[in-house]
Length: 77
Image 1 (cartoon, rainbow, N blue to C red):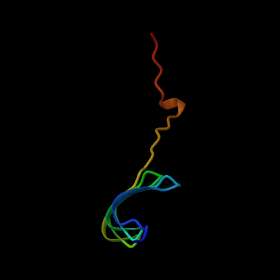
Image 2 (cartoon, rainbow, N blue to C red; image 1 turned 90 degrees about the vertical axis):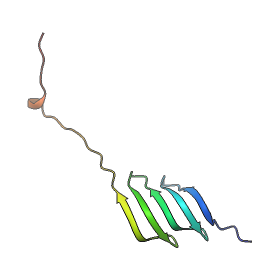
Image 3 (cartoon, rainbow, N blue to C red; image 1 turned 135 degrees about the vertical axis):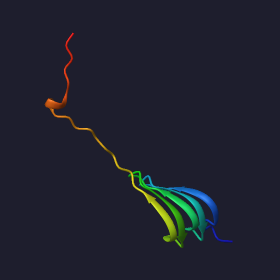
Image 4 (cartoon, one colour; image 1 turned 120 degrees about the horizontal axis):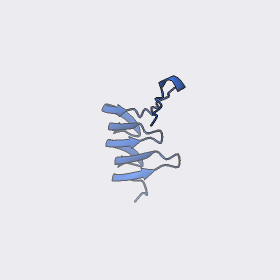
C-alpha cells in the first residue's frame, strides 16, 4: 500500500492556495477547484496535477475608489 492521496479531499498549501477535489496518486485528478492566495478561483477538470479539459477561471479584482479634493462634497450646517 502506498501513502499517496487518492479519492476526494482538500489540500492547503504553504503559499495559502487551496485545492478541493479529486486526487489520484498524490495529484489533482478529475473534477476540482483551486482557490489561489490572490483570490482567483479555477473550477474544472484536472489530469495528473494539470488543468485539462473544461474549466472556468474567475479572477479576483480589487477595486479602489480614488477621489480628488474637487470630487469630495462638503456639507455645511
